Image: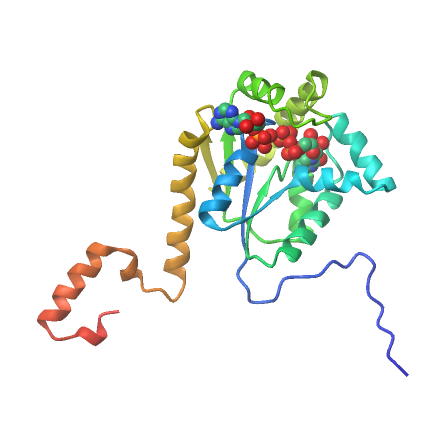
Amino acid sequence: MAEVVEVHKDWIGSFPSGKKITVVFVIGGPGSGKGTQCAKIVSQFGFTHLSAGDLLREEVKSDTEQGTMIKNLMHEGKLVPSEIIVRLLLKAMLASGNDKFLIDGFPRDEENREAYEKIINIEPEFVLLIDCSREEMERRILHRNQGRDDDNMETIRQRFEVFQQSTLPVIQHYEKMGKLRRVDGTRQPDMVFEDVKVIFAQLNTQANEGSGVSRVQTNPFKRWFLDLFCGCFDMQDRRN
Ligand SMILES: Nc1ncnc2c1ncn2[C@@H]1O[C@H](COP(=O)(O)OP(=O)(O)O)[C@@H](O)[C@H]1O
Ligand SMILES: Nc1ccn([C@@H]2O[C@H](COP(=O)(O)OP(=O)(O)O)[C@@H](O)[C@H]2O)c(=O)n1
């Protein structure tokens, strides 16, 4: 008789053990340009972009009780329970097959962060904060024209409130850990990306240094000096 294996109903899956998974959180006020910068990061650095807001909007389309609950909370500019968003993130991460993730619009509060640590628990490499003035964010949202139910003055006010009250403690947490990377998001998108690029390029350098790639290969000057030095002593095969 076949053995009956009871699978826990909430089980989503897990990453293969030993595989290095890179996570970067992207946070900022509503309309600060998170989605805009994430699109640029994806095309240049090969990350999978997961927008917490987009995953929730997708869930709203499913005609379920949970979908209706999420729809109402988003319409009011309030946060959806953390466990829901963390499970949606994990599902999307596993489905992507990638190992580099940009998680946009998350964590929005300490509860989000704790649920992530409990369920996914992959330490972010760093947290990119896009800084922008409230007036500029408001102007951008009101011109966004994506037909979003929450892009109206009353909901925008509540979303700013949530950012001030709930997201700032998360920012302070990562700042204390030395993980916060702040960029000035009030400038044109390409100008903002110039700074973002420098931050992500450092991540690539760290990865090379931590992998089997020779450190010497990452620095052309060192490479040139060692070639010269080794050439003098006929050490061509031992230089790395
Ligand atoms: N640096 C920028 N300067 C001017 N407009 C921007 C900039 N970044 C984004 N936008 C525009 O502002 C709106 C909000 O940007 P978006 O990336 O959707 O923000 P978020 O994901 O943070 O809510 C969009 O219409 C976008 O095209
Ligand atoms: N971690 C998250 C992210 C978004 N959300 C909900 O999704 C809404 C839209 O988030 P978003 O990231 O798409 O948009 P912005 O407010 O950043 O423009 C928020 O106002 C929340 O209602 C959430 O509850 N929890």
